[in-house]
Length: 273
Image (cartoon, rainbow, N blue to C red):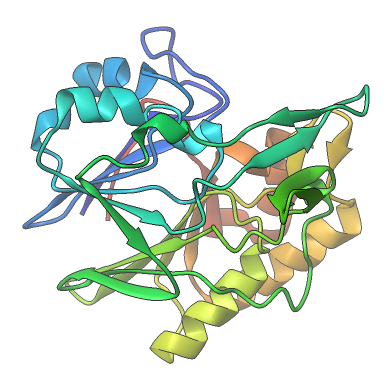
């Protein structure tokens, strides 16, 4: 399985652009998959530099209804009119972030593309193809990220705390290896992994994606909580590759706890699993 990072907050070199967002290309033996499309058309520009043809993508999975993961959807549809696009049925609801002035700014998806014929709406556990599935409905049992504070949703015409029901995670199984992909892990990375264990009866071999331990320079997870998360992750025996909303400083803390069991992925990186 070949994995290429098309968009992330950082970049391995100036030849690749970066932005606050996430887009990961995954190539299995039989399928070409895109997990999220970043905040803009940057994923497409970087894909060309990475030798990835967006027109050849078979499946696109959007992890949740925030612009930094689905902002490139219109560009994707312009360049690929055959791929099946899997989006949670609540991902096009209204989502906001409360800024420093107390105003709620819209951070959701572009509703004008909601009726595109390529979109397949999902919920709960959804099987895409042999060895490829997505799941949502995570129970927020423990270590729920404080960095979710101020992330809101519109329900019954009221602005309330987002419950992140629109967030889904991807599982790919190939050659006796199981890889779990998370977009932002708003529901808590430990809760997501526990849900994975409940449906699969084992831990994943690899976990790739954001863990939402940092949102701004002023809002990051507590150090003792990061240490606890690191210890929990270490006990799973999986190899972790994190990025995006994990944040560099929280990652460095996780690295101190987990050592070689965790690494950081920047735009332009390729790994072979």
